[in-house]
Length: 351
Ligand SMILES: Nc1ncnc2c1ncn2[C@@H]1O[C@H](COP(=O)(O)OP(=O)(O)OP(=O)(O)O)[C@@H](O)[C@H]1O
Ligand SMILES: [Mg+2]
Image 1 (cartoon, rainbow, N blue to C red):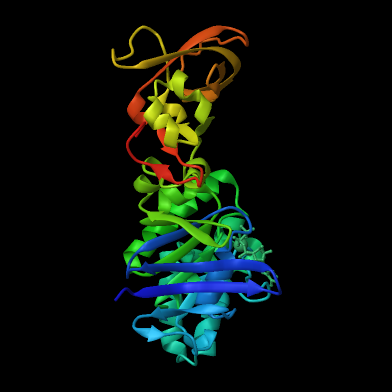
Image 2 (cartoon, helix red, strand yellow):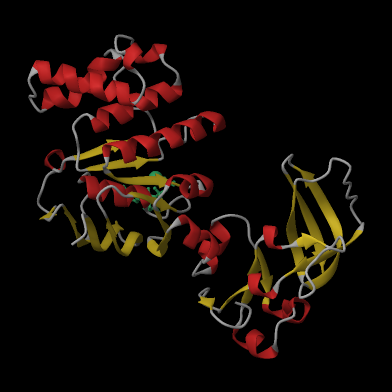
């Protein structure tokens, strides 16, 4: 049996809103598991149900072989980190972290040791005596992390803990969170709607859409082997083309007959500079927009198959693409994915 098991979880608010609709998954000890999906897809509702802050309409949750259904939230041994730092402004950093241990009546000496340990883990040891107002946003969020970890929970839940931080800090802190999770060997569920963050930090990603699970897999599986058009489009950038584009994509009538949409990643399309492999397909187009981003550039091209974005790696600063310039795109048939009218990936055909 898995460490955490969520089975057929459904949550209905009021009459019609189905925030969760038959969600099942399992998380192993020591696993970093991420819930990824757009706003309103049910991520927070699921996390709150696991923490015991909300009841499921149907379904069950078990942790470490114990059914949680009738266990109140404060007895679930679950630590939670929220989006807003939720620190007590009038308590010092150390007092903030000690709060949960006081509530659990842990003796003072042990509390002091554990708080010091937790603060060192999140690299706030030197700031124990400060008030939160004297800390940066990233440091305040580390208080939240230390406070959740100090109770030595069986499971750590994090609901968009980095979304209030600037881009650089987000990257630093996400790597730290991942390192800390692995070093203390705890099961963690992390919520984000940032797909790059999910790819960077997770052992497995669970992509959610409208209260349902679209796909669960490693970052590589989710990105390179998406099972639905939703996953293909939500994670990374994807060119989605209509069935009618078949002939321009070198697709057979048989493949086209089952296909509703085609998809191909920008990095799988190259500018033809005479060096494409001989089995490549070619498509002529016209530059609509050129965006230079330093280590890569994006070209939006108008083609007979539709608008296509392609990626140029390490673009020469001299490369200029004026709108209206003709270009030739090359790609391989194997890199084209096909999806049926339910948005489900078809095997065979294009891929
Ligand atoms: N207390 C509530 N009462 C009624 N509807 C609710 C309540 N809480 C959430 N919902 C609805 O349930 C759905 C899922 O909400 P939830 O907060 O779980 O989404 P989310 O994936 O966390 O979104 P976000 O990325 O914006 O945080 C939404 O349609 C939301 O409006
Ligand atoms: Mg949320």
